[in-house]
Image (cartoon, rainbow, N blue to C red; front, side, top):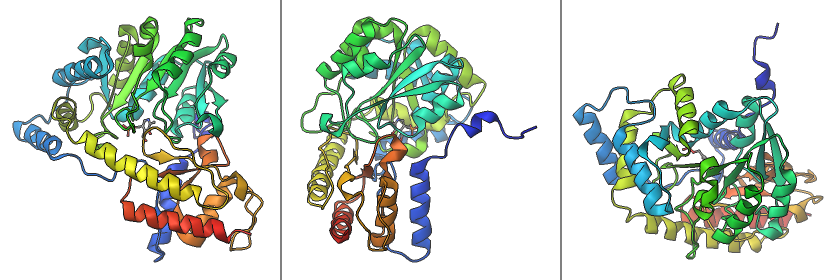
Length: 400
Ligand SMILES: Cc1ncc(COP(=O)(O)O)c(C=O)c1O
């Protein structure tokens, strides 16, 4: 009898964590390595948020909280959805989890039966398919194209829907491509969904605040109110408020779904960390004045990286609307020979030869379901990014 669960044979470890580990190993051997693999902002959590956590500790807010979250935070989440997205949710329709990750996981545990399909546009965040598989569901991928800025076309979405489709998972701005859907582009997709009343929408709006050049963020339940009753809108404080380590994510949706997710969480982790919840309350309801500064810094870095990558032989990098990732194609380097003598056959070869030759760690696109590409996280200092891009240009220039 096998000791490990069969479900484990269906999933693979996170490629982004593996790249970070490889970079750390090389560093430990004394190599000069620039890591552009991690998906977190390099900025520190704003001081007012840290202070709110310290105050919470001093006040003794150190006990179990209600499973779905402390009431003031649930109210602040409802207000956030009203203020920023024009969405009406009662506090009781919200749920606070240990990171956005737990919210997604709760949703799948609470809704997936064997054989249920979840449509996932590719490239996708590495955890989506694995979470679906762990919960007995079947991921159905819809590939996008670089020429279409990695966005799903309505016809492609329509073609992927079957009687077994339970969810469509949308993520805008996207990890890994940075692509963000405009109001009209979302409308194109929600029009399709109106014709398929059995399909629910799970929208991962984690990078909502990181959009550039005047881009207007929009989210499906806002664009198409008729989908409100079958949309789970998920968000979190990790990326915009530089709080990845605090582990707070949240969502709002129809009562019956939120209740089911709360039940799942109640048998798993219970309420999220009490101190982090008080900090998240400050993040959502305190001053928001640092956000434009973060956006300006990320936009400057995006422009630097896109321009330098497009000067590298064999790379093609579109300009994404948001997040802090770019997803260049390395198609024209396939078949060339790296300085080590190895012929580059896949994007995985490209990133591994780049790491060996120049000490720049990036993540291969096949890990995100679409290649040959690679993902660069530009959430790091401008000088470091510039140096990394110089090395990438040198590597590409040395391919024969
Ligand atoms: C698209 C997307 N969704 C969700 C998450 C998870 O966020 P959290 O760290 O809050 O669990 C991430 C983190 O990388 C992400 O990129």
